[in-house]
Length: 234
Image (tube, rainbow, N blue to C red; front, side, top):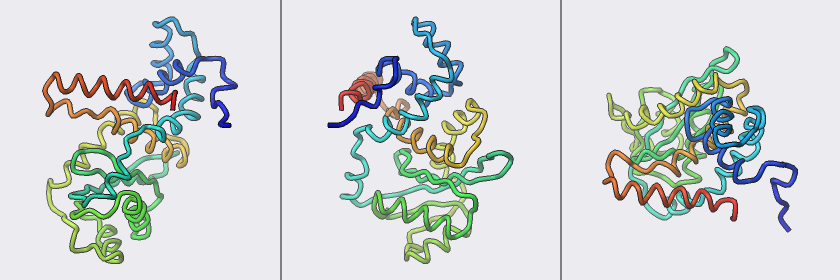
């Protein structure tokens, strides 16, 4: 019998789920979430919100039933965009590697201390093991990408050029807004955990508002929210 993960918490699971969604999905601080919950008559401390996000954020992210990975392995991938973000942790530069597909969904996030060939190779193998091999991989001019693709035999699929990797560059913006609201990260493990969680939440609520008609967008938004609320029952 599966144990209830909320058994030691006095707050209801619905409130915990709401707090986690507000903090991860929107560029809010812990105290912003505390104030928003207070306006709804819910009295919690911002440190409680921190505990909920750290404990239940990855759990909710893993339960989001998108089934995208299994679906993508069955079809031929068209195009991926790869890029790395510079992230400061206690004054030391780290690199958050991110793979984005042609629709703007984040496929993989991976944190390393270097931008060497070995780091790029681990990142590529991790993404391809989960999602399969794409027809085209768009990167910047970092030579680690070319060296890694040559080793796995994908050098003929790499595309490098000015402005053609804007899909990945634009995909960094939501994460950068969250980073500023969180006042940076203090550990490499915390960055990896939050980046993966944020990516799952972003994919679930990414409804392509700019290309869909209003009625289609509203229907997709209602479906995504309903699916999100059903996670507690799963």
